[in-house]
Image 1 (cartoon, rainbow, N blue to C red):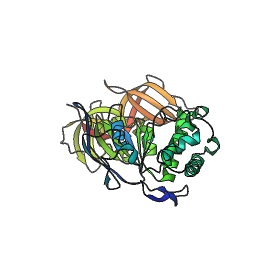
Image 2 (tube, one colour):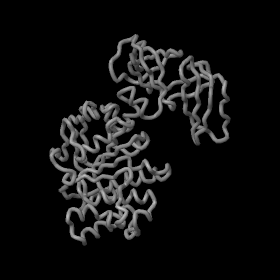
Image 3 (cartoon, rainbow, N blue to C red):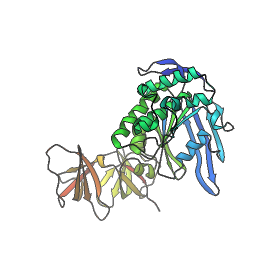
Image 4 (tube, rainbow, N blue to C red):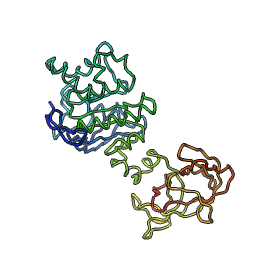
Length: 376
């Protein structure tokens, strides 16, 4: 059973009655389905109380990792360690893990309060304790008035909060969230993301969130584990993943980036200098891996690191399209024979968009673009 301890309150203080967040270590986790490798040599060291996102495209192995931590799947190699205890031999019912599924999986024949108390009832807790804990958690998720209702009488967002309360009722050492926001519309999704972040901080529980939504991972997480084809590409703080990606995959998958071919011509005090095939030279951020001058590279330019200028300096191009997106306008500008570059700029109210065919110059903010060896 999870160790009792203080929890974080909304004011940042800890009170009695909830389990402390516990450290989780995935030590060399590999899993194979027959001859196919689902995840390979995954190593993650997660601190107690952290919210970690497992981010990647479909089929990258993130749900496999979640199922391994939960105990629904026994890995081929490696160990799962929670609070310095190897838990591989424990069945799911003894792992003190709370799970919120994408479809919430509420029992339709039970009331909201009975759903929340279900885990406690399965563990043989007294009825009075079940009822008291259900009331406390429903108050916590702001559904104290809905205990007597049935799931069909609740909205999608309310059902999600009930599922979260049910997962927290067993005072889990680890909370697992399997794409819990996927079924919600955009506005409700944002509200629930904020709510889950608040509840996770209040409960102080270590949390693993599976998602393919980059904005969700970057906004909610303490750290992000980016996966591709079963391998860990990078594990770092959201700002580090976005600003200093370790690989071309991370740079192009997380956020938006223009991938432009060029050549490393040298380095000076400002940083590596990249000559673009389309013309012009760009000073990039420090290289993730050493490269010799003359190496063919792919330079990743984020749209917000580019701006359109009226002067003679910069890369010459022609506007193909302007897309107003609320406070931002995204221009597509043709540069040479490659794909158009996307350039994001603040949009001033009442401003005139640049018409297709307008010749422009593109300035690149120095020291922000990332260069990676070009694919052979």
